[in-house]
Amino acid sequence: MRLLIFLSVISLIATGCISDASGPSESAADEETPGDVDEVEGTTSTTEAPAEPTADADTVGAITLNDPFVDDFGNGGYDVRTYELELDWFPDTQTLDGVTTIRALATQDLTEFNLDLVGFDVTAVQIDGEDADFRRDESELTVIAPQPITNEASFVVTVAYNGTPVEVETFGPPPPGVASGWNTYDDYVAVFGEPISASTFHPANDHPSDKASFRYIISAPSSDTVAASGTLESTNEADGRTTWIYNAPAPQAPYLTTILIGPFEIVDEGESQSGVPIRNVIDSDLVNVASAMLAPQADMMDAFEELFGPYPFDVYGSAVIEDGFGGALETQTLSIFGADIIGLGALTESIVAHELAHQWFGNNVSVETWADLWLNEGFATYAEVLWLEARDGSYDFDTWVKNLGFQADSINGRIQPPPVDNLFGQGVYQRGALTLHALRVEVGDEVFFEILKAWNVRFAGQSAGTADFEALAEELSGQDLSGLFDEWLRQDGLPDTLGEVQIAPPTEEDIRAAIDQTAQCMADQGLPISVDSAAEDLQAEINRLFTQVFANGEEAALNCSDSFSAFG
Image (cartoon, rainbow, N blue to C red; front, side, top):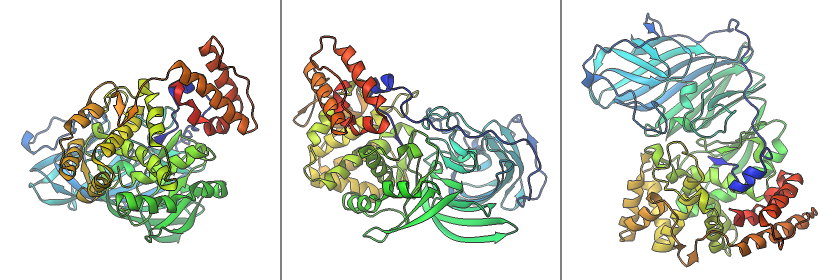
């Protein structure tokens, strides 16, 4: 996930300058849904209040993984191997009929277990073809096995459900006003969200520690295009509706699914040098401008394969929707961008690189718990800079470090774990990236990139944690790196130096120089502004500066954002 987050003073001064996402549209008045999804036959209990468990507690799967960043989402007692989602979408009533088939392996003896599902009416549940009772308690769907399931046994759960997808309050991005998961807009659907998304449209073990393969069988009006994570297998049209089948065989964290239904174009952009097909899915009104924005993807993939190892999936590309949501998300094989990412110059290019890098860091290797989020965001943020270095071998890392040091107040706290109430704070991004650069400086380039490649081989298709990364780095470097990781990840306050670069808050001289640099940057765009870096009231001059900068438009401000660093 890459957010359009500026330095704190900019955010305060320029409130409202960044496009907000249009909120998902209100659901239509209740009416009968045309057509139906074949339901699992059988009579089941639909008790809303949970009944007291009658089974031995040792055979009840955990109803939570106790991950404080996502409340009760995530469950225990089994390991999902595959999801098959049969989804019929009816835009006129904004209703979804679904049948989800889950193939799983028991990790203990089970007489009952839980799945996560937000909203919907569950109409039937089966285990291995036999009717199963169930009960609901908010986002928990408890399934009672008709026959005990023994430890290490494979089993199949089928759940039929229908209703209008429910907007969920997000734990992190997207920002307030944008639902996480199944987002219904005026004429299209876009699925995205982190850390919770999957359970807003299908039963799931909605936690990145339980990865699985996905197959999507999606029916919608034939006037709509449907796209999803993975590779398109087939389409079939009948009675004014088209069924699209996508296959995503590589293990995937549940939140990393994206689905798009609406007026989109699927644009073939050729292949990377290694032969990875690149296809984009773009709102039909944005094809030209969005295609230009995404043009560097193949070159970025070539560069990242040199640094991180082979691209881990069968296909890549990006989706661009017509509404903004304040950033982008690395949904597996098909990253998704809001329209507010288009036309932001160097920032747009960085975000495109960021989401591609996540395919290695966050998707191929996912986090074990959300406390390890820096392993996703720190790596993808550092990859933005690695792309700049690959494109221009003279890129100045020392200046990059110094500029981030100017932001010390926003990245001063420890990031492993991050604060429970600020999972997606700037620390996991920027301080995470600095942690990696500190490791690179300590062990040298050869060993550093060996570590990154080995990470993607040893834990490919799995979830891993900070301790795993530290152990790998120490193994390959032959060094005790505990002090480095403690200092950068687990202690409050930034270290004083990184290599030979002093990390310090900006001086008055730095700030006055930044005022001049920003004014010159605006003048270079033909947008001169009136400021006086020698003014006695420095804060008043900063306020005047930003008022004028943002009055000239968001794009002009973003083009000069490198000059903002000293304002912290």
